[in-house]
Image (cartoon, rainbow, N blue to C red; front, side, top):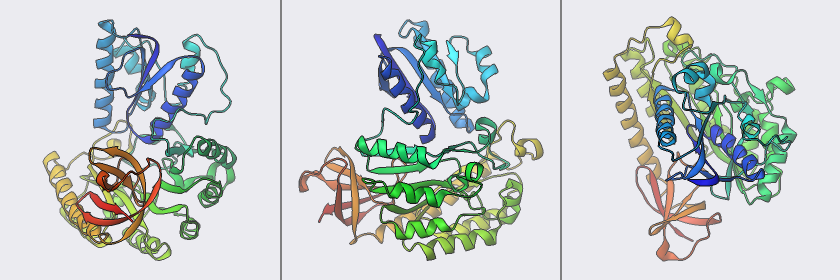
Length: 432
């Protein structure tokens, strides 16, 4: 056990990671040594930042908490704190069931930990962070919460209504990060296309992206978690005209059947969705679309699933994830629908839809062979440098592997790479 050392463990999404990075900076400001996701945590204090979105994530969070409770009982740590979405959602239950935790914090009051450690302090520059990502890229969270009421989703229950950050604050954060050496920015929110409605009474995401792109030193901007209903099409002009805005959009579509979309309370139709995909590709030539789909939602019959398969074949998404529906406490779906699709059917549909996508992804990757693409280098791994194109977000998308034998490349630098080979999820290339 290392005195004056705190281990931070982050579970869940990149929005949680931003909170952990802010906490780490504050802890370091008051004199602690902080590690993040250490393979072998050795600090006297542990802080677990939990996820409470779906069943698997909740289970992982609970198991991690119990693992550290055991470490505390064995004297390997002296204090254990828990924060994040799980404790926001199940605060009373966790306090009762896991008394070994010294204190639970929710999603938004985690900075009280500083005072509880005996260091009352006011942190005005809330965007200052200890980056846990490679020095050349960072996540920027532009809002919290969500005003959507999708039938299956517990996030509005956990995080509350949509709250946008002012443009000026976000631009200051980007400038701060550029000064730290960051070149690539992943713009994240639960629904970034709703940005600004609460404070500016209009969708202001296009203006925000323009302002960020104007900051000297910003090389790539990538957009995550758009929503198909009332899409702000003025954003496409910015993507098309600004060289440092990646031709990439992460937009969760969930389904295509009108029957399922209606039950999901998505406020879009099959026709809307087909037209949206067409317009995205017409207005931003070469755009790469990442989406997420759900199978097994209550009422999804074979005809609905067949529509979804045909949609995936037609859309040919560059990146696609899928998951099986699971009931979540407090949601509209749990209150109003019976979870009637058998689990084995859900898993069968999930496997089938992903097999279709895997073939499409392999074909689209193969089409890149012979092209020369701009690539940023993330790391060296064995006999390869590993990088990404503008069409690839960290952690979730394909990577480009360049043999180290071809010469030294700098981490965080951009290179023109000719693609020489392709696999289902990765590309191979050589420096031009």
